[in-house]
Length: 226
Ligand SMILES: Nc1ncnc2c1ncn2[C@@H]1O[C@H](COP(=O)(O)OP(=O)(O)OP(=O)(O)O)[C@@H](O)[C@H]1O
Image (cartoon, rainbow, N blue to C red; front, side, top):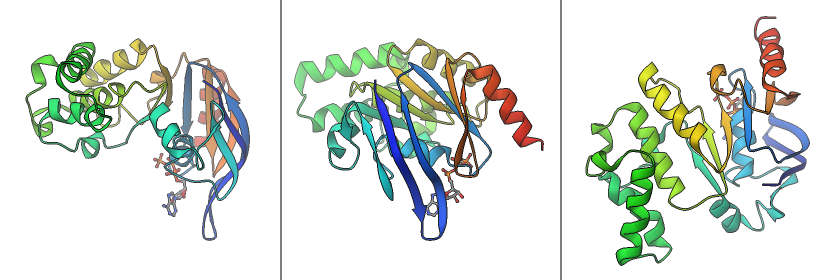
């Protein structure tokens, strides 16, 4: 994984969502923390091209998120803050099959791919349910399965344990820890990122700390309580 920000900034009219930022990311686990509205989601969405820089550029493995948007999207999976919204089809199994199908995978190969990912996230028993028949943690896993079946190299989680009880939180934490793929995790749940090798702290549209998890958490606490 080689993500590079080159003086990338995001403005909405006069409002600055992200000040010009230059950095490169290659660690397998990267945490992103900061107060509400500090620019975390904007930063993460720049990586998969959902948000375009107003100036500067972002590349993923050398691919420009604007010029090579399709290739970047295939490489970077995104689990949204409210994952129920990204489950499009009424039945979980069909929703997971939707992505590979749209890439032309069908028949036995499609079944194999869907079953493998259901098994990987312990969703086999839940495959024929509708999203509203799942717990919050199970919805997170179903959204994750639909992303992982597309074999992304990097997965971005936007507050994956938000509003989950302890049991569902543990379920999601285990799934994230078990990923072989690279993960970028935005979280207000600091214990989720507490042993990550690299954690970025955002404050008022700026990257204000970039380092190990423990120092980052200490820095964030100082900002939050000042
Ligand atoms: N589409 C948009 N149009 C205008 N302003 C926006 C838009 N998206 C985000 N912003 C603004 O940019 C700033 C950063 O927002 P962002 O969603 O990146 O914050 P965040 O750190 O992810 O917040 P939270 O922890 O609350 O999810 C905020 O002030 C927000 O209001």
